[in-house]
Length: 499
Image (cartoon, rainbow, N blue to C red; front, side):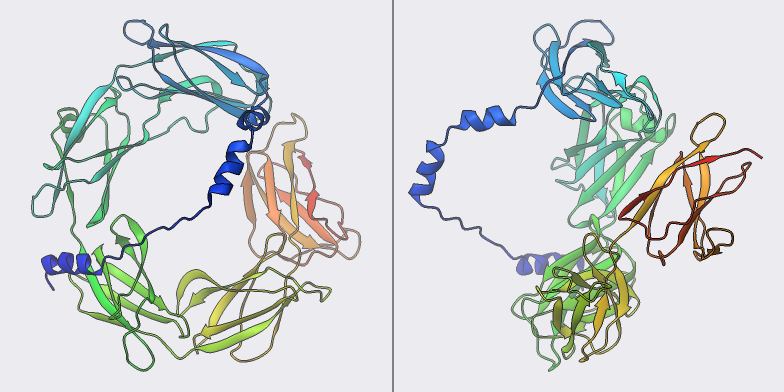
């Protein structure tokens, strides 16, 4: 099948939807009768400190009016615009915080971020700060396809590496070119006029519905950077293969409006895509990258279908057969035998493919039923907020009971006993003891590495007479006392002694 025919077929299969809204005049009048100022007053955040921000040109020192400022602390945020003197007042909820970011954007300058960050203790919010913006430089190029033809309306997203993301300091100032997007013109050309002079590590992501997504990393002081600054950089998109097929039922007849999901190395600008079949049971996916692709299909009243295909260039017409539906049913309870309503039953692993798809929800008495299951074995995930998920195969046409235990968490700090500083690398072990901790049966098979002085473990292991162990290089091993019945959140802190 040619690519031209595929594109024509894509147009024939495109489905359009319309949104309908209806509302009476009375409801509209009722809204007008409300006093909007009262709601506005209630929504106003509490201001604990006013921060005076001045934005200046880094080259001339002149004020920059009309710069959009976003001040974000851990406790709240403010969005304001500089006046004719490049100044603005930003109100923040508290006078002290552990995290503060000021970002500034202006069409003629490089988007810039100043960041204050302290991990262990709060610091006072500065009452005044000058942020200097570098005049923007223009970068650009052209996007073409694998035939050398320009690609119109491709989205070009700039992703500047954030090298200082976890660094502490007061403040750290850097360019903030994160997900800045422009679109190519009819000649496939694009440009961006707010780039910094020194690009550092810049990623360029190019997406278009009919082409495979491409990411190019620009390394400083290379030919790629030179062409980018000269607006002559050329990026070629792979057209990929178009996948056309149809879904058929157990009777061999086409199935209309069946859901079809494709998973492949890349489909257009995603790794998975979903569509529905037309009245003839046909579906279409453009721009699929070569490699192993998996097609999953489902429809009301029928069992699911799954096929795999090694794609190499254009694929033939692919048929995805649906199976005769089977019934899976049962009840979800807690360890005391009481029903767990609102639990989700999801199809997680089937025929070697992991694809978490909710298929049923328990009712008020904990019962569930799914009448569109396949004949062969499926690994299900049964889950609900506040409970540990349970993964198990469920039998066809057999009443069964699934037990969900309440989620329990153990967390805490691990520090040096002499300095009280956090230990950067350590391991957590879980075990149980029947003699007060003298002997411990360590039951987790894999040691859990943690760092930076904190750990958090979801207890999906036997919790009776729990003991927590800590190991770190250069320190003596430590363990907690026996915890007979851990709570929902159990805190245990450790101070390790050096060997």
